[in-house]
Image 1 (cartoon, rainbow, N blue to C red):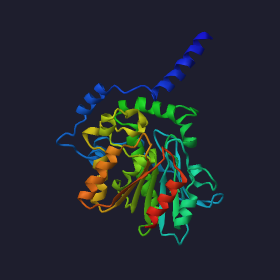
Image 2 (cartoon, one colour):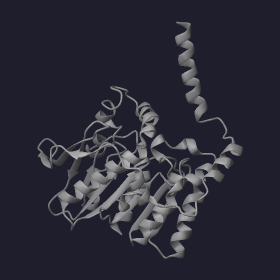
Image 3 (cartoon, helix red, strand yellow):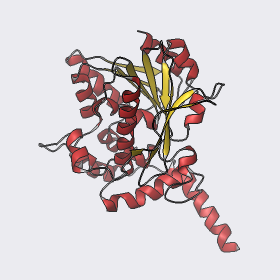
Image 4 (tube, rainbow, N blue to C red):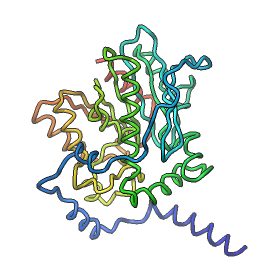
Length: 329
């Protein structure tokens, strides 16, 4: 009994220390030197080729009308995750769709159900006269509890267990989530047709993947990344590698690209990128956003960054208002 109490104490103590212990900047500096840009950095698309995803995502039940919700839905399967469901609410007269990418502790139910939930996006879509699409990431909602281990009840535990085993198979959680994003965007575009615009809005973890959406083969009108603005090299420089989950770090990614490369490629396609974060958000770095703005200004590209005063890592009503302002412009 005493041993169990001691083990529980050690787990709680480790959790408490994890966000409080100081970074060893000597070691971080060495890691930063190892992460210097190689002269022949291959790029984001080459990465996807060199590290193919393993999930083998496939359509199960193709787009159908769900009478209970009034939504169109598509069920899909995955070899390494529980199956998922794409959800789309779109009126015939709506000429644009918001594809919302939630953060890691949210779920698609919170996005679609009317009400005051912080992650509800129906009011934002309604104000803009746009449709709304979304789905649970592999480790969210009911999918989380039917993944690698049944009934974990914690996205952090599920993320850790997948991140423990996937690298020995030559992949990583980031790569498999990119594959799912690519699949979802292609299926949404196939259903809504080529004439309607798709706007990507991603929060926190979803913001991390929002940057990648315009590079995955589906035409995107606007990308809005919220609560995520940090390059890996800047995280190393500041000793802040712990502020993002396992999903954030591609296996051997620094040999191929960093955030500035992804944003530069999107902007070079004449597409719009919007970034929103709070001034006290630990996962967003002023050094990174400043470098992105400087590079875009030099080339007169369409990048805007909004830093909200007195804000931390929160999806607040003010954030939602900024989304409406950006997509109304």
